[in-house]
Amino acid sequence: MSVLLILTISFGLVSFNKDDRNFEIVKNLDIFYTLFRELNSYYVDETDPGKLIKTGIDAMLESLDPYTTYIPESEMDNFNFMTTGEYAGIGAMITKEGDYVVISEPYEGFPAQKAGLKAGDKLLEINGKSIVGKTTKEASDILKGPANTTIKVKIERPGAKKPLTIEITREKIQINPVPWYGMVDDETGYIILNNFTQGCSQSVKKAFIDLRDNKGAKKMILDLRGNPGGLLDEAVKIANLFLPSGTEVVSTHGKVKQWDKVYRANREPIDTIMPLAVLVSRGSASASEIVSGSLQDMDRAVLIGQRTFGKGLVQTTRNLSYNAKLKVTTAKYYIPSGRCIQAVDYSHRNEDGSVGLVPDSLIREFKTKNGRPVFDGGGISPDIKVEPVKYGNITYALVIQQVFFDYATQFALEHSSISPVSKFEITDDTYNKFKQYVLNRKDFRYESKTLEMFEDAEKAAKKEGYYKSAVKQFEELQKLLKPDVNKDLDLFSKEVKEMLGIEIAKRYYYQKGGIQYGLKDDKDLNRAKAIFNNMDEYYGILNGTVPSHAGDRRSMKN
Image (cartoon, rainbow, N blue to C red; front, side, top):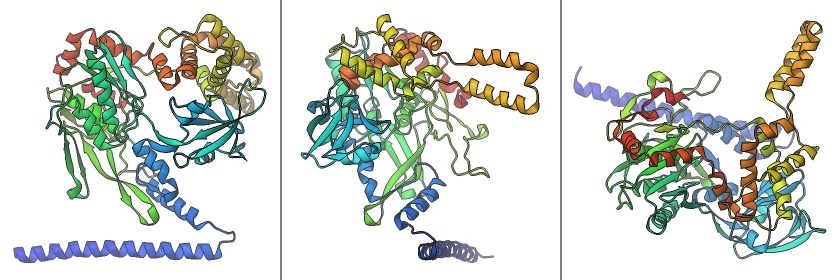
């Protein structure tokens, strides 16, 4: 068979396959259209066409991965906020408490705080219309609006005899991606980055230069814990702050080869020498993993904390008709060593539709610049692993039921000021008052999973006839397992005091105060400071002469 004939046959197969695929697309779109038409014409009850289509689109995209999403015009404001950190409104976080929408945190320096709104204020009316019973989304939509417009809010304030009406002028709100930075000891600077919104690299750069040039920082900690990611370009710019110009930071590869790209540091860095530690956690994802992974691959920083989330997918936004958008996964990204850290394999689903982690058999070893082993397929493993804090059930119950929040509101009514955050502590007297507050709350529910499982076993024993022969033992075990609020408030007093201190500090020093208080006994931060006090260990990890968890394959599945 001649080469020409082989090429002709191959081209014919390609054309056939392409035509066949196009036919399948047209056929199924026609089926969908006719089904939708018949459904809207003959379904027994009235249907909402827009809602039906949105449900269908969401279900279709959900079958691919969690990051490919449809954004209708009505949700564009929220989408823009996620990418830019900007919106127009009053500048406050809100929460739901019973039938009321409550101010949980006014942002310092923004309209809500300047107008006098406080955490704990219950919203009664906005512009004369009742807000009681509304969801937080409904309230948020009303509070937002064009900059320089005014709204009147009627609030119920704890301790006030009658409702207050406050007029607030909306402003353009730009959430600072670096909510706090400062010195954590005489030589160590600390920068926390919450998200990768537009311009965040400039905020990190400004903080770094201030700490180095004005505060005397000789070592630096970048905190990416819980940072879910954001803009890829901003991740490249932040890595570029610490990597030499020309260094590869990340590359992307997908179906459309014309879109494949290598992202390099294209500017002069601000510092390539200062000892650098990066704090990461299970909540560090996407752009956070690009920054931490590239700095690890180039042996520029020591990573401390827990294995990261493992999101190695890149999304691109495509315009749709009627001002809607599609955020679609178009590529995977690869950090300098060549590894892709995507942990979940969405392309191979189980029979029930569930997805699993990349199997051990497919995990491969790569090398950092200095030859240290690192692995793909499961997030970024830190060089120094720190076990995550595990809180007691009592602490979770106090957080979920907003007991810390409510007590802090009461505390703020009784105390006009507190000491600076660096000196403020939860005294025994304050803690005893908090304990009494909790014990007196009739609506506080405290249960344990162990007791729930025991009660299930008790029911099974009664059903199967074993209970009567062991009634006494069942009763004694039930007493033993029954949660004791007073006992557990003593047993877990350290962590409860920490959470209470954070909430109270926020009432006087806002978000910055809560962050600073939370860093007082932070395990990851303390480990970073400890390694800076042992520079032989620090450089040994980067040079590969001191073992690290980054090269421990077993840490991939922790």
